[in-house]
Length: 534
Image (cartoon, rainbow, N blue to C red; front, top):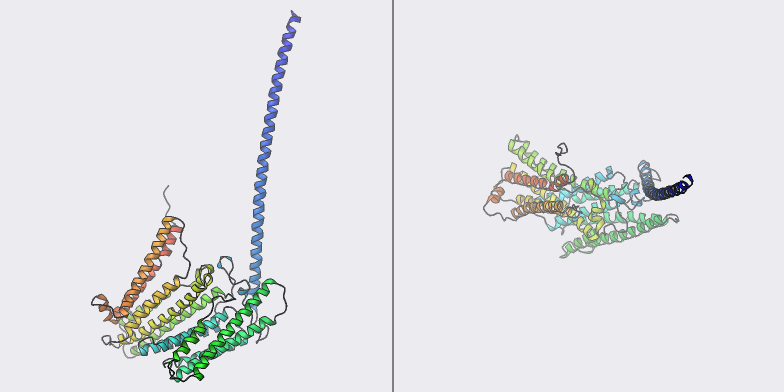
């Protein structure tokens, strides 16, 4: 029996061995697949890690490059700000501002700049504003904006524009620039004494000589820039060569323009009699040459420094106009005690000027350089400068009318006809329109979300309609289109008119904050302390 059982056991053990081998081979196969999958996953992970590391290295290199460029700008800025006023000689060659070396504008609209306003520039702005207010006094005496007053105001504005263009590109701490500042201050002050005269008078000749002298002074400044740029040593640096070429072209252009302008003024003084019928063409031609400046021509200026100078000039003008109103009122308060009504009148005038200040677009605060018309399109930049001119002119007209209105109110002569109400209403309307025009020269950021986009467009439309409604009513009152309603009753009372204008200005200011409030509501919670329920 034993020999017959052995073959069965042998065959059974052989089958079990085969099964074990199959299971073992399957297990080994699964192990290899798992190892292969794990290896592939590890390769993918390593590739992702290396990719992240590569991007991190690239970002780090870019950041180091930006830091290096910024450090170079900061070094130039620090060296320029720490430099003694006599460094290089008190009659040293013109030097480009540090911000101009980096083309004036970096990514994000941030630039490294020096102090935007120096004490010398501040004094020069005070002198220019004195000229503006003297033209305003002439408008008050004439009761209108005459052609002569318009030309004189434009001459003073172009004098300021020339100096602002130079001081936002070149260092003005050397002795030549300081002497030029002083001579220009003398010329503007002397010319401001003759602004009441018409253009067909000897006083107009004095103003024309002043304009020609200032044009020749700037021609001399740019001649120094031209020779300094041409006489610099040889350099192989591409950026330095490009800057020298731009300096040469910029100086050449301004030399030609200022020389032509001075020639036109001198021809009007010595080449034609004062009673020449076409004497007005001299003023128009010279002002066209003075204002014919290509924005950012060949050499960009320091954007934020220029914005600071524009804002300072406007604020100084508002301050001088408010002071003139107080001076007019002080003549009456020397003989009578001010009453509550008088305080209310002066306070309303102050509120009106303050609202105009709030409506003014301050480009130096939070405006990105690339969002501004000055850097976007040359025609837009030209119209922007024109808007700045008309804003200053309309504000001066408003101040002149308020001077007359204050005198009329305190002298109790409101019932007598006069030009003060027309000047006040017309100046206020033109001031609002000029501010809107300047504000339109900036890029508006609108959300991508359709609902938020609709809200922002609606807010801008509401602001525009409110501003033009107030400006239209004020313009109608200025032109005498009042009818027999509430507008007519306002024109019969000085204090009621001032109250109405101040209230309208406050309403326009509140509506101008509509887009900012909407932005706060959309971008971040309006009330962060209130938590949403979950």
